[in-house]
Image (tube, rainbow, N blue to C red; front, top):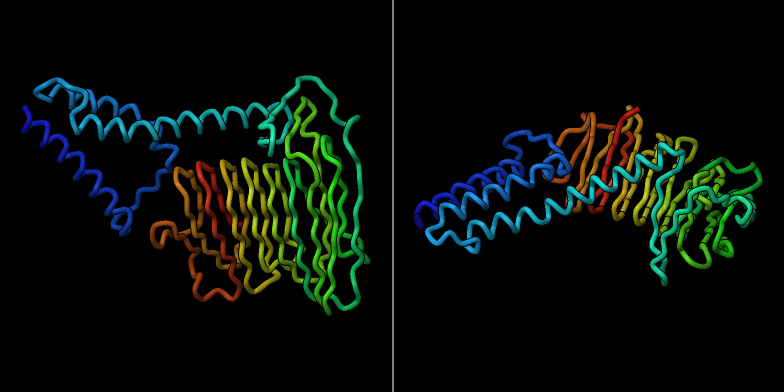
Length: 332
């Protein structure tokens, strides 16, 4: 029976190794997301039970069973987490919310109240930075806790403006620096990064307004939030996003010859739209992510490109590092 058990273990290792080798070297296409694979984690438990039956001692602590159970545990955790995340997101969306979760810096606080009205306690403030004459480039650095972030065009004489409705914090600190034809804006949230949801939606909203004339570099670091940016009217050279559990919705434009988008996130739902006429490359790092890259070709593990990328006059580079996220990139 010991020999039978060893053969059983050997067959499993050969199958797993052959599958991994084929995927890494693109010997075959296996277009199945990690979320779909994780649904079959109980199969590993069943195989572990078979290994126990084949073991001469009928012991669970044989090498084959231990290996299979060790593989089943992370897949099972991911499957349960993924399903729970999806159910919560669906429930909030059905009620008219935007999904948003955050962990307080000090208190680890998350609250959800049914029927409370957050609008009466929201702190409404406005901010603005005037545009200097002849400005050619601008840099925006944003730091914030949990909030819904939206984007609009600024007035002609303004480089940057913001309209915020916040509860639980004292607002943002706004700083600006000018150097020749370059302007730099820092917009950082003050206070705690906890969040309060009710049946009318999230009680933190930040509407950012940017001038469309300069070339923008945007750096955002938020604890968690709902971020929806239509960047098609803007000349965006670089975007860096660092988030916690978030919904990220970006629509990129074609006004630059080369644009770079870098996203580092925790559990997140990421949707990015790129123009049909622009070449796009995606680099994806991180474990247990579900992906949907329609119109892209897999070059190697973690690298995807649109057809004709090398010869494209304009290019967009997307680099992501996330864990247990749902990541979609589509053409428009």
